[in-house]
Image 1 (cartoon, helix red, strand yellow):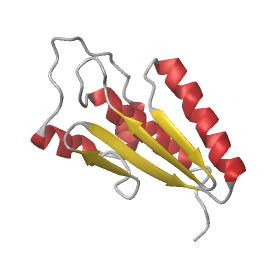
Image 2: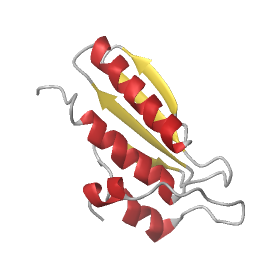
Image 3: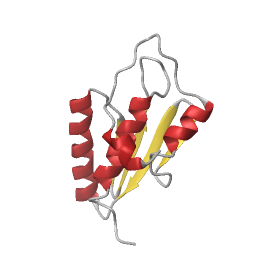
Image 4: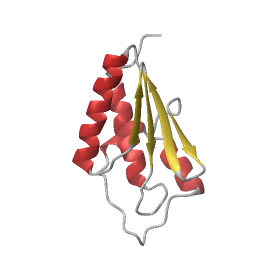
Length: 119
């Protein structure tokens, strides 16, 4: 699944009857997010680390992700430091990963494109 395709999907809320994604489902959705940023941890949550040139860019990115989270009512844990933002995300209602987590990650990847540090 392409990153662009995943970022364009609607964020659909799950119900408590939904099961968390596992195995091949996780692998398929992982193909739609930046593998240099994100990892699936214990089939439970996503953890991503974004790098920035400076604190200002990291702060601006954090603000944009916060606006996205409010818009979609899906709130990741954000850890801001100089030149870096670490994101942890899962769907609390099912205590695991759901498609929406990957949609949000792909959208964060797209936001980060504007801040990509020069290498």
